[in-house]
Every structure is written in C-alpha cells, then in structure tokens.
Length: 455
Ligand code: DLL
Image (cartoon, rainbow, N blue to C red):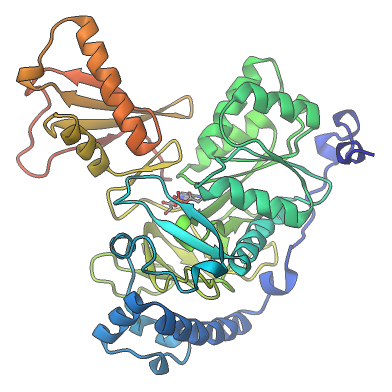
C-alpha cells in the first residue's frame, strides 16, 4: 500500500477531529528539571571549550588575547570569561578558519545568502546533522506533528537551512515529507489538496501569500487539509499570526534559528504560543548589552548570544546573533522546562530580512559601484498583502542621464539583475534624477522600512 493511502483522506480527516496532544519528541530533555539542565550545560561547556581551544586556532588566539584557558571554565558560571564571536569574525575566518573537525569528517555545508565577503559557511558532521534534525523534530512534535502527518516543506532547499532542517526533522518524526521548496504556488496548492498536507513549513509571508491564493481559488478554511504551520526565518507579528491562522484554519507556530547555529530549530513554539523554547541542552543562551557586552539578568531586553554546546564541526562559542530579545523561565503549561525567548524585537545591526533573505545595505552599495553608479540610493521596504515589497531608488549619474523611457527601463532592468545576482532576490529598481534623493546632514538615511514587524 502507498504511504499516502495509510493516511486518512480529507473526507475522513476533519480538522476538528485532529487532537493537539501534549507530546514531546525527546521528553527527558524537554522536561528536565532546570537544575539538571544547568548541570548538563556545564558538563558540555567544559568539554566544548577544550575541543574548540585545541582545534580552532582562530578562537584559541581570541582566548589567549583575553588571558583565558580551558582550565578557567569550570561550568556555565564561567561563560562570561570567554570572548565573543561576531559575524565579522566569521568573515575573517572564511571559509575554514572556525572549522573544528577535519573536512573528511564533515558531511554537509549550508550558507547564508550574500556576497562572498558577507557569506557565512557552516559545516556539519553527521552528528551535527542528527542533532539539528532532532531540534527540528521537537518543533514539529510541539506543533502536533506525528507519523500520521503530511509535512509540506515550502522553505527553500539548497544552501539555505530552512528546507533541509524541517525536512530532516520531518523524517525523524516519521511524517510523510513533501520536499516542495519555495515558490510555484500553483503546484504547492495542488500537492496540498491532492496529498492532504496537514502541516505547512515556510516563511510567514509565504504562508500568508498561500492563504490569499487559496482564498482566491475559493478554498474556505474547512476545505484546506492543514492543521498547523511552522513559520520562521523572518520577523512576524501576532496580528499576522492571527490572520494566517484564520485564512488557513490552522494553528501557526513560530520557529527560530540561524545558519551559524545549524539553522531552524534553535528555538520553537509550543501550544501556549508565548515565546519559543530554546533547545538549551544544545544551545546555551545569554542576553547582553549590545553596546557594552555586559551580561544582563533574565528578563532584560538585549542582544541574544548563543554557545553551541555539542556541535562538532562548527561549534561557535558566545556567538552574537544581533537579534534583540528577552528570555524568560516562567513556567509553561506545555510542561517543557526549556527557557523561552520572546519573538525577536529587532536587530542591533543593519541587516534587513526581505522575503526571508538576509540583505545588507552595503551589498546594494557594492553593486552600484560595480555598475558605475554613485552610492546615492535609498531602500524602501513595505509589506503589502503580507508580502514584502523591495524598492531601490538610485540616482542616475549626470553622464548616464537618459530621458527616453526605454533607456531608463533598460538601465533599471540591468541594475535589478545585478542586484538579484548579489542578493538572491529581485528588487524593484527605480532610477531617479541626479541629486533628487534627500541628503542628510548626519548619517545617510539608506533604509526606509515601513513594515511593522515587531509587536
Ligand atoms: O533564517 C534559519 C531559519 C530557517 C529559521 C527556517 C527559521 C525557519 P538565516 O538565514 O541565517 O537562518 O537568518 C537568521 O533570521 O538571526 C533572525 O534575525 C531571523 N530569524 C530567524 N527566525 C526568526 C523568527 C534562518 N522566528 C536570522 N522570528 C536570525 C524573527 C527570525 N526572526
């Protein structure tokens, strides 16, 4: 019998019959008493610091400069003694400088979008892939997933971690996993309806877009087989959550992660939907003051910093995420004892996330200079019908000035193409007259972000 035939067809599988059971993927870890979690973290940290010190000369140098040795780290109470790592370090050390295992023990690479200079390349041993997929499996089970589910993975596959992470988690849980990747909404809808997808994984903006498309095609929530969604990789508000939940007739769960720490699954939401549980047995979280680096007490708002406790190939210690966040140990009704992070409330650097892709204004500047333009530009981002719009206004050079419509359109297209190659997403380039973008007396206002992304 085909696997799909074992799952109940939609006619027999009404949403109100699907129980949201309180279940865990790795119960012992997810519900461990806090004191035991801290003990486990301490043991893992001591080992990890030794592993990094002995195998990553780049980090050994940072520790030596700070006068810290592995012997100084006896447990998590000593974490603050270790130096931070930042995206700039990852750039300096590109591509192999932070690798802690021989390449022949690595089985996978993932990477963030961006230029070579900005790119982050993360390495995984088989152990690291397993650990990462376990984290994603926890998220899927927390969203009510089991081997009865059809998991439609509409995150991008490839170097981006979204597709591979949820895909691996789906296998671990035993879901029938549909590796759709992103885009091609017609095909997404056809597979969803024909194969009765019950859990959708994609960015929240794509989920909202799919909801709109389903509505346009006349599908009311009761005709859509989905029961849950696992959405992340970009900021989204609770208002957007409610809208998606209504259109698709599902419960929408948040999931967080970054390439540097494996990918999605560093933290995930449970049914209480009051923040994401951090998989603390693998990732030790701190909140710091982004200006001074001082560690802040629980409940303070600051920059989120992660230490990977048992990743082998790319074990970043005290990695500054630049995400602004709050941690809380308030008891959760789901029974998990894992600390929670609030939805990220912004970033402490200039990175923008547009349609799920990380974009730095400096990348746009690089393209403009390469293409013979002056760096007089403005990025305008908005969210229309839950979809990010991405306009780049660029001043024409007087010597390039053309007043024929076809001439302008041709130049805009060429520039948009060059930006697409650099960024991986398509901007809408608008050429404007020389000196027409307002000059600022202080810092140039390069970005106008009209989206209301943070609650
Ligand atoms: O976005 C990994 C991921 C894939 C997470 C699929 C969730 C689902 P990067 O491309 O390296 O990795 O981008 C990491 O995205 O530092 C945050 O600023 C942002 N981010 C990720 N998840 C969320 C979320 C993936 N749930 C950067 N809410 C992070 C808000 C998020 N921002």
